[in-house]
Length: 302
Image (cartoon, rainbow, N blue to C red; front, side, top):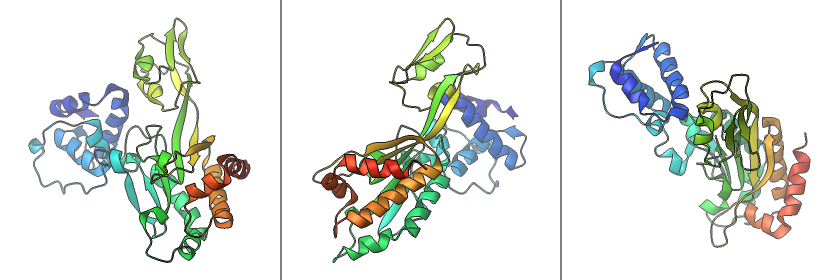
């Protein structure tokens, strides 16, 4: 698809390691609108649509578009990076499921955030969790009474899965691709963990450092780096408050069936062992994380 000069200039301001995906998103938006040429105004409309807002009716002149487009603006994550997006239908007085900017089209997301969030919300809605929590509260339902789940599209973890009862993080494991490595070093350059190095025969990965964020995969212009595996990291037991604790990893590279099973197991354990008014993380402290992990990993073997 052809691009006008101002639209291409705005695209060039997007970080190179996500530019290819951003370009594809914009072109798909324009194509869906029946267009054949990407203008600066089309970029503005795409930004709004991907952020979850309403696109303009098209009555404005395309020449009126202008300004600087950043990756955050395009994906709709300027505010979502800090606080996540509460997705309609995923929230009750006693539990909530939150997602990161991936739900608005963040180009860094490795998963379908909304689909995963909806699936997990279905587990909670069918679990009897709300009745259990409500039965242990004498006064009003406060923020800390809620069972909180967050979904993060990538290991950047913008939705803060480390400090909630149950967290899910998208993962993408890099591996050698079929393309010929040109030795450009882009894959190593974008890796914040220094987990990629480039040798004469191509890229080498230090999986003890790798966070499975997929940035090296997106950055490679020669298809010399590919996705070797993917899935979800499952975390449990996090909270803030007077005695904060970080959630701990229960499973790595789990599929959707397993994360749903683990969440079901977490709720069953909470209903069976949780005291009146007790938070899930407080129960984890009381029972011991080793026991909780054993239970959740056992149900996650499906």
